[in-house]
Image 1 (cartoon, helix red, strand yellow):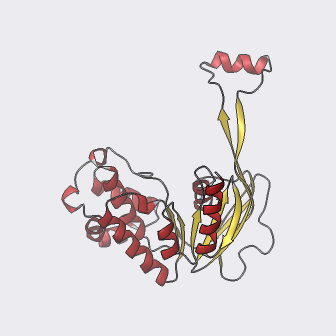
Image 2: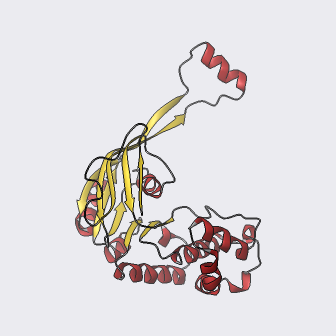
Image 3: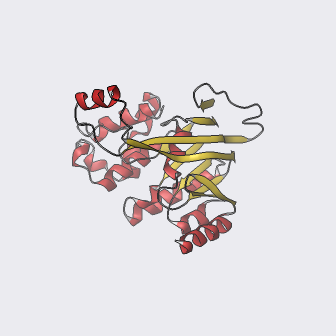
Length: 265
């Protein structure tokens, strides 16, 4: 199973995803428009267009010409200061965002755990959301039927089976989302600050499950500010700074480079 996403009019370059490559990113650029002034009405927007007023926004490159190659079985930690493009990179790999330039190619089934509650419907119960979120993750209904109680038990939410999610705490949201995601048995797991939510017991369960996937040869991409977890889980590291790759290599090497950046302020 291979997915590719490229900037408009572009095609994947020859040689991408050769051998045991799981994820390959070439010349990846993602740009956002940041409003500087709000146009309150349609009249304001039309007036700006007719009178050719200067655009009330600035362009911000969240990622600039990023090149990354990850192999099957790698556990890769992505670190960097706030706003360096870590979450944007994960969303591009997951297919939540599309690049403005460059290409992303992914081989294998992906389980993204990116933002708390994405894919959930707050007015539905935990039971209903298990089937909804499971369908989004590509888990067949029969498989959800078979693993239903495993999901609730892992999340420690059995007694809240029929409670609407709008009454859940953020920790309960996280436990349910993670518990469903791991049941899809993915080839690639994308984890954005998964260890920063939930209580200590849940974090330990997450860590144990991530270790289990790692030993099974799955590819793991973890974004985290918890540097000790990066050192413990990952065999590779990537440091992003201002939307560009600042350093790659062992977690220890990348963390040292990160500390130097933070010391410079």
